[in-house]
Length: 46
Image (tube, rainbow, N blue to C red):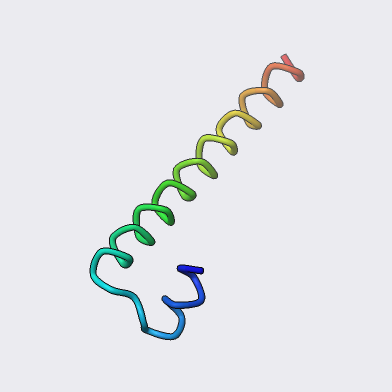
């Protein structure tokens, strides 16, 4: 798994790029989920 190899410092340059892209995508998804939850909560209290 990429995360395990990253923690051990064993990633190739290509794997590191892939892992960083995965982390960035995960961060973006988390932000979008938070915004969606806030929008839904706002609509329920309106």
